[in-house]
Image (cartoon, rainbow, N blue to C red):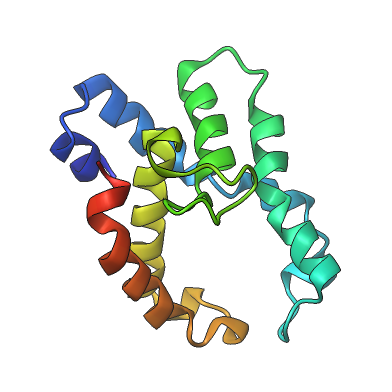
Length: 144
């Protein structure tokens, strides 16, 4: 993440903060019941909606802290599932309205998951290819 942040010309201290804050992007998943989080098959619409709530739960968990790094982590938690075309969640942000720290984390997360096959659950068997395609399609736009 630091390399991406630096490539965008962000100040060194912001690059450092993004690098340290980004690992908290999925902290809201602690609020997802195990029977949903660990489910091997396809999620029902209701289960998927609960799973999607992890972004808001993570942001809520972190938002009241005074630390700039934790505030950045809250922003990342909230925005790392937004998509350039506005079809992401939780707020359907689009394009440059997605915070840069969320865009950087989203791309880094997709690339990291694509490299670690064991991290992708069976229900997401085709997810690796779809994530790679998404990165190729959005890599220029997402970092503009």
